[in-house]
Length: 171
Image 1 (cartoon, rainbow, N blue to C red):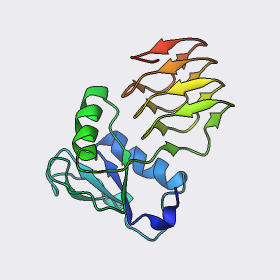
Image 2 (image 1 turned 90 degrees about the vertical axis):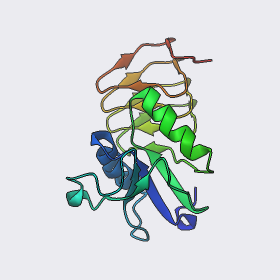
Image 3 (image 1 turned 45 degrees about the horizontal axis):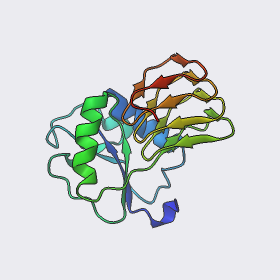
Image 4 (image 1 turned 120 degrees about the vertical axis):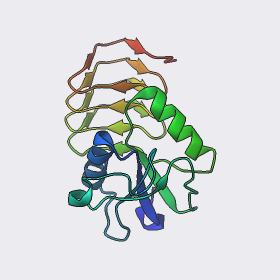
């Protein structure tokens, strides 16, 4: 993804994990200074407090935000059923999602990531692992060889998925 072709990166979800995603996106290099940090929320714009320290400005609700062609989104919702509902609404309007990999994460050989995945700080994915679309692996979690995780799944912090395990509807 050529970041120079991106008009703005928007975080989907403006609760706790959405605020974390804003920071992790910056660490992953999606804060070039050419666009402001903004987000869309399941709540109405202006209904959120506490985002001033991160410069997060809620520009619209997921229900009515119309993506621009140059917009890119990162998913800041970890609860699988809420994530699926909100992301599918935006995908239906042409939204394009980025995969965010924190620079402290370790990804071994043959790790396949679906669209819109989020790999947080301290994650270790050893080798020959397949993650579906919109999978979230939160801080300090690990996965062993040959593991599979299906679309929309989220692993909370400090989870260990051992080798050859399968979560969700993993193929």
